[in-house]
Length: 302
Image (cartoon, rainbow, N blue to C red):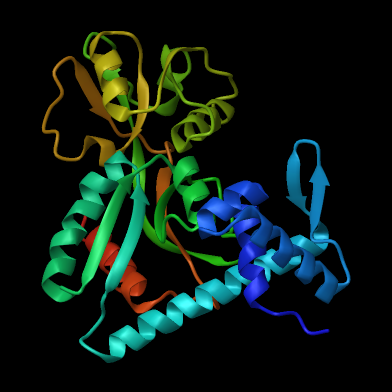
């Protein structure tokens, strides 16, 4: 029996929402309707697509294959709708973009002006989120485009159903309290007191990489996520911080701190990830991503 592709939308909703009841709310139907569609899907496939346990439901291996197919179908339909719209009065549509503070300030905000002039039919809905939350929302379909950060030694490929576009590569800087001797080479950083970046961030990975380069494990104090928090702690004499150039852009001087660039610190990479089929986004997403790349190329971060 051939699978009715309309049933895949119900399976995808269960996967994204985490259960039948939540999927029913998401689809604005009754839980019974969701259960019936899942049961018919399993009958058509001759396989169970959900594991039903005391703590809820999870996808079986067959269910995951079908959910992936549902995401591809959804992306194809979205692309088709956007392409049809582009045949009319130009590129139109709403693009939901997730980005973190420094990327919003340096790239996203300037892009909004460019798009308003070149593509007045595109509306960009900017959501400020840190990368882990943006990724979760991208997978759930709540965002169309996200900005991600990586330390220079990380090269993780985009998962199936999404595509990464390189945005920019910016050098790392060391910010030291004014009372601290200004480091002149990497080895001068071996015994300094460091502020701790939140685990898993590109800053945290860069600091650990620097420690490996110097053959040591840095002792850190405090913990920061926001770069302005790091600067406040540095100017208070609490320690040194590793920050990317974007976080310092537009700051002619920082009272109580000195910014130092040293060979060997490496760089932070920013990429734009979008949901896609065959690596092709819809026209509105493509226009936004292209504009972001153009703005990033014009930044002076050396």
